[in-house]
Amino acid sequence: MKVYLNPGHDLDYDPGAVNPINGLKEANIASKIGKLVEKYLNAVGIETKMRQSDNLYYDSGYADRKIAVVQEANDWNADIFVSIHCNASGTGRARGTEQEIYSFGGDSELLANCIQSQIVSSLNTIDRGVKEYPGLIVLKHTSMPAVLIETAFIDNSEDAYLLENATDEFARAIARGITDYQCEIL
Image (cartoon, rainbow, N blue to C red; front, side, top):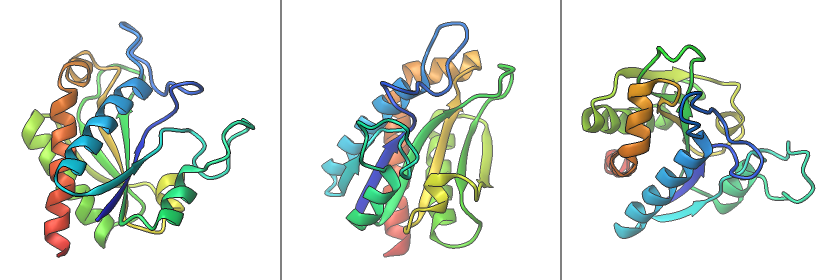
């Protein structure tokens, strides 16, 4: 199995959501989790490719970023695409984990349910379920099953604590969800 990992946003250009109290940045958390997921998947023989960039589908205005994430995943013939993010509500009150997919039915939903189950059971996060988001570039333009993971709410103090202190647990849960999916489709 070939897994394309896309930690959300960009360490240089776009930090993503930021915790207003402690300054915790989504791009940094997504990067840490992504690197660990890659390590765990490689350890069990799953081939990975990873790129963290906000140039998702030739939509970047920056001349120095010529590689588009979605096109690279498609060209590599990845079996699945996993984008890792932190959610934010703007109020600091929302909590939990959710998975976003292009549409219900099929392998994307199966993958999302496998990952959601592992994160919620491992970290005891609030289960916000699997949701359809057909307008998201990483879900709309990928040619393989794709999921965007919203690990937890970076602007909620309890969820932010988990994101900062349970990075490894998130990564292990995501990797287990991917291997659960692999077992389901074989």
